[in-house]
Image (cartoon, rainbow, N blue to C red; front, side, top):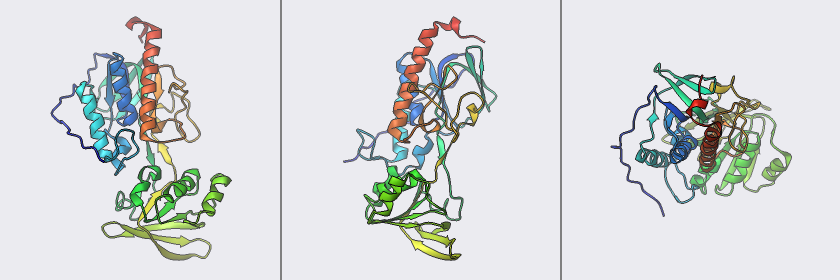
Amino acid sequence: MSFSFNFNPTINTPTLDESILYDHLVIGGGPAGYNAALYAFRKGLSTAIIAKKLGGQLLNTSSVDNYLGISQISGEGLNEAFINHLKQFEVPMLEDTSITRIEKSGTLFKVHLDNKQTLKAKTILLSSGSNPRRLDIPGEATFSDKGVAYCAICDAPLFKDKIVIIAGGGNSAVEASLDVAKWASKVIVVHRSEFRADKILVDQMLNHEKITVFKQTQILEIFGDTRMKGIRVLDKSSSHERNIEADGLFVEIGNIPSSNLVKDLVNLSETGHVLVDPHQRTSLPGLYAAGDVCESPYKQIIIAVAQGATAALAASEYINQLGGNYAFNE
C-alpha cells in the first residue's frame, strides 16, 4: 500500500520582517525544523524557518517506508508533504538564504542573513543537520542515488536480494552490515585499516554467513554505466588492485554536523555535535538544537521530528517563564 499526496504549490508564504520580534526562529529546513515551527505555531508563537535549502537530507533519500502512518513515499515527496502542511498555516519559510552570524544581545538573539537582513528572536532552534562524509573518489558523485547511498537503515530494503558493499570500520558501518544483511543476498564490508567498532558487533559481523570482510582495503573508484556496478580497490597488504562487483554501496564513515554557526556560543562534543539536554536545550539559554546537528545516538527522520517538537515546547515554556515582551531586550 502506498500513499500519494496532492501538493498545492499556489499557497503563498509570507516573507520575513525585520521589525518583528519573533518568538521562535528555526534555522534549517529539515524534519526537525519543520515540526518545531509547526508546534511553535500551535503554541501561539510567532515563528519562521530560514534555510539555504528546504528538505535537507530528505532530498537525498530515494524511499521512506519507516515513517509511521506512511507505508511508502519518496524523500522528496515527504518533504513536500511537510512543507505543504506548514503552508496551510502560512508559516514563513525563507529559502536560498544563508546565516552569516548569530549573536545574543541581552536576552535577545540577532540572526544576520547574507541578504543583509537582521532578524530578532526570543528563542532559536538550530536544526541545520549534518552532511555524510564522502569518500571523495571518482564515481561517487556520478552514482549517488544510483547505487551509492549514505543511510543503510533508511535504504537497506531497496537492495533486497542484491549484493551490497559497506564502506567503513566504525560502529555505524558494522551495524549497517548487520542491518543490510537482513535484506541483501550478500554483504561485503570494505575498510582501509582495522575495525574501530565495538568487539561484540565485530564478532557478530565476522560470524554472519552473509557477510564477507576485507580489511586493509582502500576503495579507489566506483564504476558502472547507468547504475553502479562495483568498486576498484587496493589491497594495501599486497599492493594489488582488483574489482569487486556489487549492486550497491553504503558509505558509512560518519557525518559532519553543521554546527559552525554556534561553535563559539554553545558546548559541542568532540565530533562537533551540539550538546543538548532532554529538552533539546543547549548550554546557552534560549538556544535549542534538534536533528542531526545535535548529539544523538540515532539519526532518523521520526526522531528528528520528535526532537523538533520537544524544542518548540521547551522554548514556549522558557518564554512563559521569563514573562512578556518587556523581559526580552538588548
